Image (cartoon, rainbow, N blue to C red; front, side, top):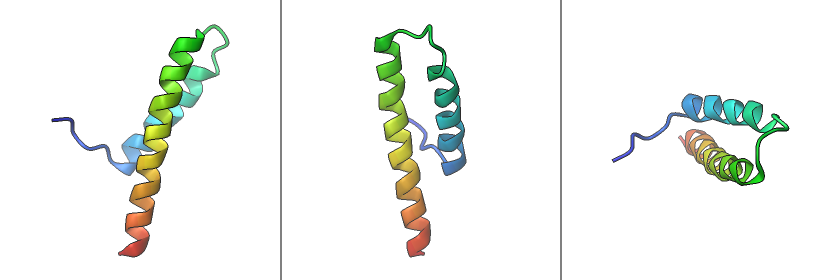
Length: 55
């Protein structure tokens, strides 16, 4: 079972992805893979923020 990412861990990975996809030599398929991962991480961050605001 995969370990659940913390908000800070997810945000750090999002920053890494942003830096990676800025490389103009990255192929389209790999860019789309990073986009998919980034969307999942952004959704995770949003869920964690929503949860913390409710508490």
